[in-house]
Structure formats: C-alpha cells, structure tokens
Image 1 (spheres, one colour):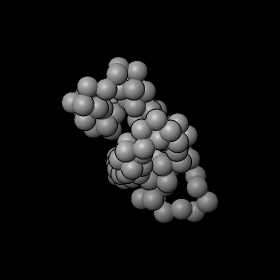
Image 2 (cartoon, helix red, strand yellow):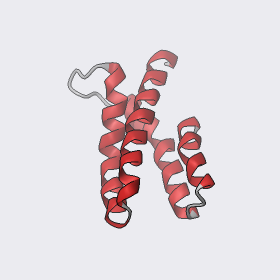
Image 3 (tube, one colour):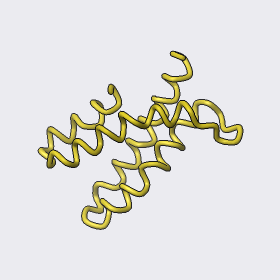
Length: 94
C-alpha cells in the first residue's frame, strides 16, 4: 500500500482522472505479491523487484505512451525504483 501511495500522490497533485489513479494504486498493491513469489533464474534478490516491476509495467507504459509520450520515462523510472524498493523491503522484512 505504501508503494501505491507513493506512486499516486503526484498523480493526485497533477489532477489526473480517477481511473488512472486507481489503476496505478491497484498495480502497486498487487506487485509485491508477484515480486515476493517469483524466482528469476538466479537473479540477485535486490534486482528481482526492479526487473519484475518494469516488466509488468511495460504493457501499460506502451499503451499510455501512444497518447502522452512525456509520461513514459517517469513511469519507467517509477516502476523500476518502486519495484526495487519492494524487493528490498520484502527481502529484509520476510
């Protein structure tokens, strides 16, 4: 929930539509379950979250980039950074 809140706070500030905000929150609400349960061929534990977050966000980013090319780089960065932070938190908390 913390990752979802971190991602949607700028979206709320920019006054994006509620469907986009809800979509981002649900994505980051579900992402920790995927990151913590996936095994990526011996990939380092600290890198697993970033790779998984980026890979899962790519379809959304491609779809959004068609209409708004400026939003793709921040989305790429946030998905990699928040995915990495989720992976690190999961490693140390579980």
